[in-house]
Length: 413
Length: 158
Image (cartoon, rainbow over all chains, first blue to last red; front, side, top):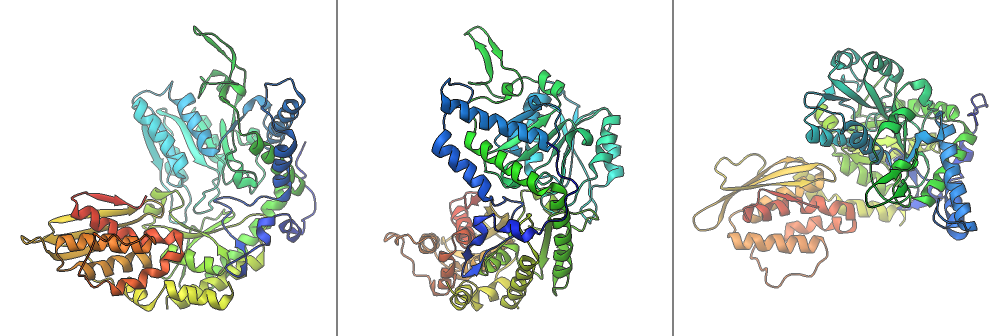
C-alpha cells in the first residue's frame, strides 16, 4: 500500500471530530490540547479497534490453534504489515515491535553496540537529543569503555553540521540522531547527515519519535540503519513502539531478552532462537496496543502524511507569528526547518506557573525540561513552555493559547 | 467550574503574598558561615534549590538562606520558610517541617510535632492543595530543610 501523496488538502476540522478526548471541557472551557509531542490523543478508530479486540478476539498470539488465537494473531501481525508499508521497510522481518522508542534504542545499544564496542570506540549524538537517545548510550559506554561524544548546536537550535562531520572519525561506531527535536522542533537534515555518516562507515540510528507522526517517512530512501519510533505519539496506544533495522544487521545481533515466543527450540543445553523479527520479541506482546497502532496507521494513511505535514507547517507558522506578537515572549528554538513544536518563555514567569495558568483556561501545554536537560543547559534555562501540534489542532487553538498567555501576563504583572 | 470561579481559584493559588515573595525572595543567596546545608531537587520539573543553615551552640537557627531556581510557588515557599524558621530552636524548625508538609498534603497534624513558630503567612500556600501537580513545588524547600537538619545532603520530592 502506498501513501496517497497527491490527494487534495483535506479540511482538517473534520478530523478533529474523530477524537473524543477533544470534545470535552477542562476547567470550564473547551479543551485545547497542545501537548501531542508528549502523547497524542487517539481517534475513535483506534479506541474501537482496541475495544473490539478486547471484547471479541482476545487470546494469546502465535500459540493456539483455536479461533480466537488465530484472530488475535492475524490482527497483530496485520499491524506489523501496515507498519512495514507505512515506513516503506523492505521486509516485515525488519519491523521489531517494542514497548516504545526508548526500548527500541536500548535494544540497539545492548544488542548491536555492546558486543562490538571496545575501549576507545565512540558513539556520537547531538545536543538536541531526548534523554532516551542519551542514557542508553551512556550505559553501553560504561559497560564497554567506549566514549559518548556530542555534536554542538547553534543558538537557533540547529545541529552545527561542520562540527558534526568533523566528529565522524573512524573511532565512531554509531551515530544516534533525532529526526525532529522534541523540545525545539528542529528538523534535522537527515539525508545529508546520513550520507556523511555512511561515507565514514558509521552505523546510524534515527530517533523518529517526533518524525513519524508529522511527516511521511521512507526508511529505505533515508539510508539509515535503524529507525525507532513510538505508537502513542502517532495517535496509537501507549506501550507500543517500533524498531526498524536493516535485516542483515538484525540477523547478526544476539537477542535482547530471552523468553517465550523468541525461540524455535529449547533444551537445558541449548536454545535455537526464532527467526526475525520474533528473535527480539520475548514474551507475550502488547497485543491490544499493537492492534490499536495498526488502526492508527490506517487512519494516518487515509489522511496522507503529506497533507498532515502541510497542515501542521501552516499552523506552526501561524503559531510563531501569533506568539511573537505577545509582549515579553521569547521563542526558544528558531530553526529554519521546524515542525510541530514551539518552545517559549514569557517574561520571567516560570514555565510551571505558565502551565498551571493555561490549564486553568483549558489549554494543555508541556512545561519543564522536556526530557532534554543537557539541551536546556545549553540555553541556560531550567525549562521552557512548549506547545506542540497534532493533526487535529487548528487556528482557534492557537488563538486560545495566545489569549491564555495574555492572562498569565496579567496575573504576574 | 465556570470561568469566574476558575479565576478565583487562580487568585487563590497566586496570592499577592506568593507573587511578592517569588519576585523578591527573602534571604536569597549563599550563607557563608553555614553549618548545615542541603539541596532540594524536584526531578519531575528540574526545580533545584539549596538551603543553608547556621546552627549556633544553643541549637538555634541563627542564620538561614537559600539559592536556586524554580517556579513562583517553590521560590515563595522557600522564601517564607527562611522567615519562619529564623531564630527557631532546631527541634521547633523540624516540627515546622512536619506541620507544613502535612497541611499541604492534607494529612492530619502530628500531635508530637508542636512549634511556637508563627506559620500564619504559610497559609498563603494552601491554594496548592487543589493542584496535585504543584504540591511538590510548595514542599520542596521544606524537604531540603528536613534534610539539612538531619545532616543529609539531598532531598527529592519523589
